Image 1 (cartoon, rainbow, N blue to C red):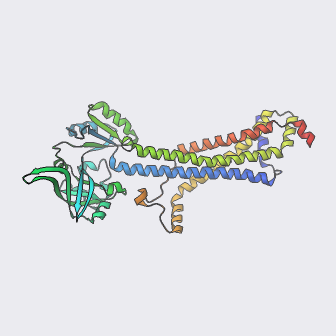
Image 2 (cartoon, rainbow, N blue to C red):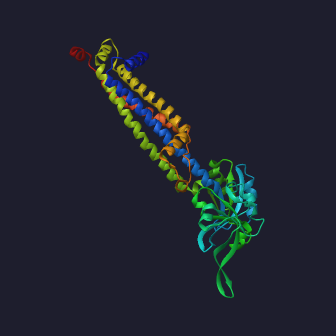
Image 3 (cartoon, rainbow, N blue to C red):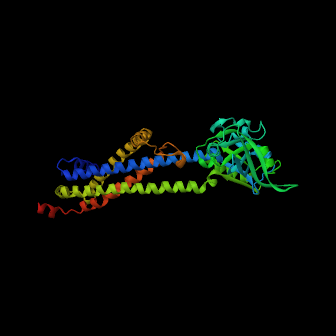
Length: 414
């Protein structure tokens, strides 16, 4: 009887006796579900790609884990670094000195963040060396008072490699003529471009020993930055370090450093997915309309089936299966269409940009100039399951109404 319900549901779905209006509603329900699912897949893939790009850009500078002291003055850092480097999760580590300063050139002044680094170690934890567009990062440490600045800062102050700048440290020196700010002349040795204004405009790099002198830190540093083989192991690594080091150390992983930002992105993705699911939910109402039309058209067939012994439960199963067929067909077409669009998104965006004559994304605003897309299997499964549930629930009420058809009254009316 189970297979009979399946067979009858298929025959009802393929019946040529159905009215044109019923056929149109059935097809529109499939198309609506397919377009809704395709839209969700494309939007979620763009969100995944955007999140991944943002995370990679941020982590290319801030590292995966940072170890510092409660006073931001890490002592005996060589010993700490040696012990941390032995952990198998660690890909590389680098000490740094951090402080605030003002940079002055050609009558222009700009507030910046100074990082004292060792270029040889810095290459192990950030992509600074890979983003140098002019000059040579290795001059830092090999030649006195060399500085690497961002491309946006260079444009603002009209600087190029070889130019001199003045670094003003917000700490005073006592002299015979009174209190004067600490000032030092640097030569621009390289210019970097991360594609993120907050770094390219507000961050500079100098030698770690020179930074220690400028900020009077002696042989101490601000902290140690770590890069892991797997960035998602950062919380685990932070717990391991906390258990090994003393209580006066502070260990921060990248999920904590940008917690609000990543939480906002996650919330944005969740809310957007819920809104997109409303499209699928609306499309499933067409399944309800389609099934009601079929029930109305097939009421005499239902009455005959009941007369020959088919139970109300089997009648209900027929229409549940019929609605499920429509839902599954829409889901399959939607998945295919969504994945196809996502895989060819670059070409589609290029065509749109060519038609409108301008870029859809500005690197100055969005930190990326291309539309990223990343398909995640879990998203595909989640979208498919939820859409299937919507389709299944939409079949219940019309199926129940069909199962309550009274054979005697229906056939008598005929």
